[in-house]
Image (cartoon, rainbow, N blue to C red; front, top):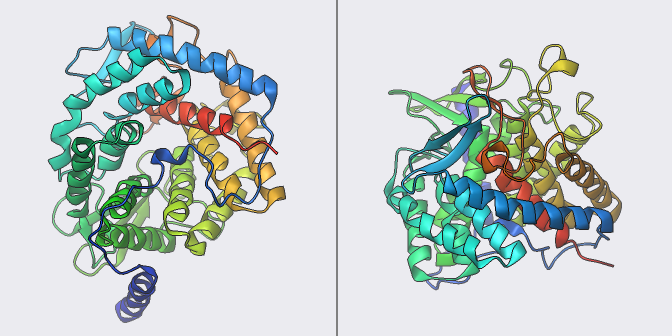
Length: 421
């Protein structure tokens, strides 16, 4: 069995190497941060719905006011994380927590969308608190922490200072890659134990950016090998994903497939499905490797034809949760999925792309309704209500979450930027 795995792994690595261009030492401008603009290679264009565009403009104005309110209740040395309605408590984190960079990214996206320079200033002021994380080799989440913050700053105002932080972060993240396993390690659980979570697909964008910016293709190589290994071992025949795959760090063999935040090992934890979907879409953006496009399309079909996806588009926290019609919804899973759909629509034939846009519209309309969208001065300053962090750990259940807002704002901007026929 190990011999067969070794042969298979060798073929994967050879395939990756064959498709990776030779390294060059000449830096170049990276791809558009977060991919909010339609790609030049878009196969078709779509007509945004005027009423939804008006709603989005209203949402973004609310978001600008809400985030000023949120930061007024957040100490300057802390990062927004969530809010507890029962006791009106703002939940914050230090810079080392995986969600620490999202609030800066949301502020800068809101600035881009509204032109409110106060939001830009607030975002730039908060960047300094994240700078130390560029050397953090103890986390796989530097993509979330640094790319979603410094990446936006670099896009809006290119700076060697910002780029250096991003490059150092990519180097730190690369130290967690084990070529024997073919993945970046997610958690440090002791000698020999090598857990990899589907969420990690999102952190690959930092490596893709670093390769595009610097010309050093070693970063892209790591991203591609990780994506290939994840495709091989995380995904089931129906294109749903396990949350966690445990590897043997010495041999690279799969030891166990399980969940940490989902209902059961064999269930489809909703946010994990959205993470993987978004991750393969962005990998296609950077590589134009058809395997990643095919994977993203397969995942999209799984999600759109998922019998337990509510008609309003906002997923239950796990697609296989018990008593599903009474299960909690997860606005974060919906916002991530909507944003990914609004990128993938540009890479596929028109009829398929329009189906993706239609589903994204459904999600955006639902999240823009009173059930999910906060009114001014409520919800602790966050935009979206009703997200789910980790039900098995009894953590952040049915609360606003900073990353739900980040991807909701990104999805709205992507929708506004749909090309008009």
